[in-house]
Amino acid sequence: TAGWLFAARALSPISSVVDRVDKISISSLDLRVDEGNGKDELAHLAHTFNLMLERLETAFEMQKDFISNASHELRTPLTAIRGQLEVLLMKDRSEQEYREATAGVLDDMRKLNRMLDRLLLMAHASSEGAREGFREVRLDEILWQAREEIIKHDRDYSVTIALDENITDIENLTIHGDEQLLMSAVTNIMDNGCKYSPDRSVRVFLTHDAKNIYVSFTDNGPGIAEDEIERIFESFYRSKSTASVKGHGIGLSLAKKIIDIHNGTINLSSRHGEGTTIALAFPAKGIDQATVRS
Image 1 (spheres, rainbow, N blue to C red):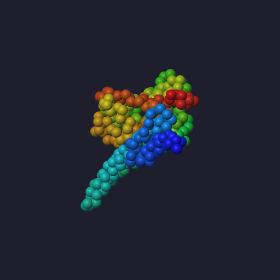
Image 2: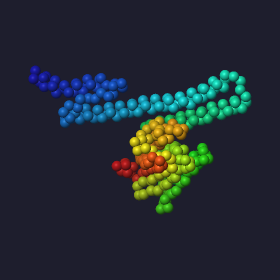
Image 3: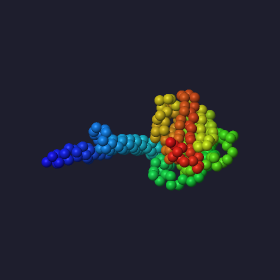
Image 4: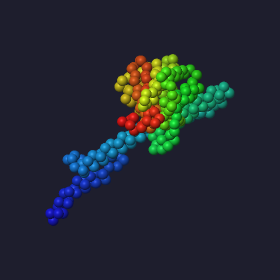
């Protein structure tokens, strides 16, 4: 009898944990397991489980917000396209009116297509297999290709690229990564800089040291208020200072995801009314990336 009593008391905390876990579902991820005295192995297990629940809760909240925001952003151009076509069909129009309406619909479709491309890239950058296509790529070549793409998209844009004069070996500009994803990240950062600068310009500087390759992008835009800087890399978040300029708030969040999977870092420094600088750092080829990040 004493043995059974002792066993029941010993197993009681485990039963309590099991009962609590049974009550946790996708709609109640805010629940937590009792960590007891916080000292024994069972308490350690409960604490580890609670940390996992926190990560899951955060991930589900982010996913919910992303789906909600994406749905809203996709609905806007689709509503515009539908409205233009419905107005067009209300009565016979002149050839010029048909041309103008068609051009408007085509422009909205291009915006929609561009946003979908970014959403697909974001999904790819977040996937487990994102690193499978990594190979040796040169950052300077990616910067020049991105510049060409940006200027092709808008002839008013100006992108100035400067390389540190101490760079003597192109091998020092090579990293292990995915060329398409890196192109997307760099293009989005350049596009942001040009779009929000009064003179439509951004200055890019490339340098390196023994361990890392550094790229900075500096614009002449309105800058970002200090209380907004922490949120600027969130999906669909747009600074109040840029609300008057068309955009979706996807570019920088996508860039951050891409930089993250390349074991790089992205930092933003800005003062309201004084422009913004975005600084990237990547582990150079041949460097132990885990060591560089530690």
